[in-house]
Every structure is written in C-alpha cells, then in structure tokens.
Length: 332
Image (cartoon, rainbow, N blue to C red; front, side):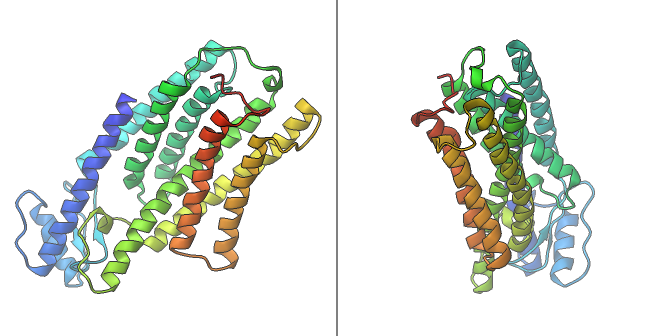
C-alpha cells in the first residue's frame, strides 16, 4: 500500500504538471508572458508554432506543450519524470502485491479468493494488472489514468485490510470445487476491465464538460484535461474495455449457475448474490445496447458505465455485508 501511495502521489504531481503545461501553452499561443519554470523554452516555442497551425514535435527531455488554440483543445504532452516514477512505482507495487497474493494462497493451501479479504486482495491485483496490460497494448497513452487506478486500489485495499481481514480458515463445503478457481477468477478479471471503463467514463465526463465550455466561447479553465484525448476518444476506449468486462461477467453468471447446480441442486434460486450478479449484467447489457443501437453517446453512456460499476461495488460491499444468503462467505 505504501508503494501504491507513492505511485498515486507521483501521478497526482504529473496531473499538476499537465495543468501547468496547458497554461504555458495557452499563454504562449496568446502571446502572454510565460512564467519561469512552468514550461521549457522548447515547449513554449512548440506551443506558439502549434497555435499558428504549424507542425509541432514533443521535446525529448521535457514535457512538450503544443497548443492548437488558446483555450481549447489539445495540448500535446510528453513524458514527465513524475509520470515515469508513477509507472515504475505501479509496477513495483504490482510485483509486491502479486507476492502477497501468492503467499496468502500458499498459506491457505488453495486459491486466495475464498472470502472478502482475499477477493479484495486478488481483485485489486487484477485491476492493476489490467491497467498495466492496457498501457502495453493500447495505441493510446493511458498513463494519465494512474491517479484513478492507484487511488481506487488504495481505497479498496485499505478498507479490506481494516475491515475485512480474516485469518486463513478452511473452505466451506460448497466452495470446495474447481469452480471456485474458474468462477471467481473470471469475475475478478471482469471487475478489472469494468474498473478501467469506469475510470475512463469519469474522465470522459470531465472532458466533455470542458469541451462544452470551450464550444460556448467561454474561457475554459486551463487544466490537465487539455493534455488528454477528447471525450469521444475516451468514450470509445471505455466502450471497448467494458465490452471485454461484460463478456467475462457473462461467463461469470453462467459459471455461477453451473456451480450452483453442482453444489445445491439448482441452477437459479434467487439468492441475493445471484440477483445482484444478474442486475450487474442487465445494467451493462443495457449500456451496450443503448450505445450500439439507440445512439446513446456522450454523457448518457458515461453515466450508464458509472452506474454499472457502482452496482459492482454495491454487490461486493453492501450485499456481502448486510444481506444473508448462501453466498455469505465473508468470514467476518
């Protein structure tokens, strides 16, 4: 958690630097004096060229600020030292997190996701894993999401450590099945992708608000959002990762029904956990359907994605803690 906290601080510093770069670029484009230390001369020069319509190139040693307008739109941003530190600390935190998860499994003699503490430990590990994988495979630079991802992981790990921690205990009979490995692992993988889609949707709403202010010819606040992709790009990225999460959640629902038949002799019994798993599926199915066939784009699709992830968190916390049923495996 301490390493995640360092990564979070580094990402937060990078967001502040992005805001400073956006301000410097806008000042250079408008001919206003640029504060010393806010941006390197090369970056300011690039911003001035960008404002006049010329091609810009990011500086190699410092974050490049290349504005294509005074208040609006894009400011190209390179790699800041704090961003590199944030990614490096995230990788280190992930390695330590993985070691903790493996040692918990070795101590238990089974996969480490049989109660709420272990599910939180493994689930947050998967969220970080998905984030790092997306950084590698995506053609878009999504490192700016590090603040949201490491912040979410910190909060969930903190809650799990303080409120959900339990010692290693034997598995209940219903959990002594190969479906524990399949069903829960796929569920945690789905949560990882849905969490990334949630973060992208939050940033999309912030970016859309900024774009609306710019479109209305009002002076937009020069913030880190100027260095990020536009809201349409963020929405498309969120849609893609949520589709992956939805496919995995669909398999989770199916595998859970098969496991229920093997453990309790019925595929569906309207247990609280089963109902909320289905509710999550319906919300995300509605999100995909509304966006693909009904033309729900922009803020409406973003809010649906946010509501969907809220149901995931509600299912993990409130349902597990306050509702009784066959799935009460928290061990609290």
